[in-house]
Structure formats: C-alpha cells, structure tokens
Amino acid sequence: MNTTAQRSGWARFWDHGRWWKALVLAVGYLAIYEPASLLMAPFVPYIGDEDSTSYVLVLIVVPVLIGGLVLVGFGASVGWLRSTFERQPIRGRGWMWIAIVVVLLFNVLRFASIDYSAAGFDWVAAWLLAGLVIGFSEELLTRGYVVRIMRSSGHSEVAVGLVSAALFALLHGSNLFTGQALGPTLLQMVYTFFFGFCMYLALRVTRTIVAPILLHASTDPSIFMQGTHPAVGGIGSLAQLGNIAVVLVGVVLLIVFLISERRIRHHDQIMLSNPVRGS
Image (tube, rainbow, N blue to C red; front, side, top):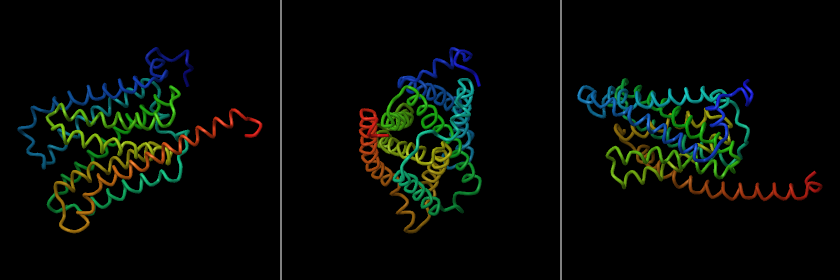
C-alpha cells in the first residue's frame, strides 16, 4: 500500500475530506451523467416509446453505466475502490434494520403486483439491469465516496448521514433541468432524501455497501415496472403506498437517529472528562 508521501497530489487532495468536496464529486457525476443522456438523444426516434426495451437500455442504462464507470475510475485513481467494498468500521444499531425491512417489503410487494405477461421478458430484464446499474452507481457515489469524505474530515455520523441523503436528493433534483415540473421534482427530492437516509442506515447496520446497492437495485425497477404494468389485485394498491411509507418511516428513524447519536456523543464526553470512572 502506498504511504501518504508516495500518493499523488490528486489522491492527497481527496484524502483530506471536506464537505464541499463531497458536493463537488456529486456535481461532477451529474456533469457526466447529464451530457451522456443528451448524447443518446439522436437515438430517440429509433428506440420507441418509454415502454420499449430499447428505451430502457439506451436512455437509462447507458448514461448511468457511463457515470458508474467514471466513478469506478475515480475510486481507482485515489485508491478508494477496494476499501469502499470492505467491511465498514462503524457499527450500526438493531433498530436500523427497520429501514431495510420496510424498503425490502415494499419492493417485494411491487414485484409481486406486476403484470409480467403484459410487460414482456425483455423489458423486465432491461429494467432489472437498469436497477443494478443505478443502484451500483448512485450508492457508490453517495454511500461510498461521500460517506468516506465526510468521515475523513471528522464530521459526526449525523452529518455523514444527512449529507449523504441530501446529495442523493440533489442528484434527483436535477430532473428539474430536464423538463420535469417543479412540484413533482420537489416531491421526488423529499422521497429520495428519506430513501437515501434509509440506505445510509442499511450501510451502518450491515457494515457493507453491498446492502444499499442491492436494496437500491431492487427499488427503481419495482417502482417503474409496477407503475407501468400493474397487476389487478389488492397487493398492487398496497404496494403503491411504498414511497409514502418510506418517507414516514424515514422521518421516524431520523428522529430516533438524532436522539441516539446525541446520547452517544454525551456518553463519550462523560467518559473523556472522567477517564477513571470510565475504566
């Protein structure tokens, strides 16, 4: 492993974490993803409507894949890639599993209420691939690199979790500049903030980035496929409450998280001020 002195100036720059570097990285990802989407625009007349397999592959998978490959290259260039996928050093708490259970539950409900015969195998497969690419890229950025930057600058886990979720919401706020109306964009940002916070809790409690990647990878396909080809039945109606449930549960878990982290900091301060008592 390279020592600090042997590392390049580029790597040393990113090693000294600051919150604004996390913002720069997120904006940089958008600066790559958005042009990559525009590069696909000439193919629109040839790929059919939003319900076509080619649409999903060309306009969703390819741009995100380009952004994901750039993120992998970035991680390799600063020596973060391997450690990002290693076991995380900070433990979670039992109640954090609630975030995983709620997200996973509604993903399963949505997958169970899709009209697969109407959707077609190719379209379903394309969306599953899209979900994997989206989950990998966005979680590598926000729960991987952003979390690392924030922790390396000595911020509390409250700041780590909130900034990670906020930058994740920012990524989706960029839809405002691609023609999406303000109202739906704001609602999407609220949902993605709390979903991103749930993914941070998944990272904490499992201590591996693989967990939020897989949860995220199953979320986007289930939402879009169930919304496009819903099956008739009560499960579908319940599944459609998933986004609301994530927001409501996210609010409650955020409150619990803030209280829990405050108690931990208070306990640590007592131990530091009275080491004899803490021994």
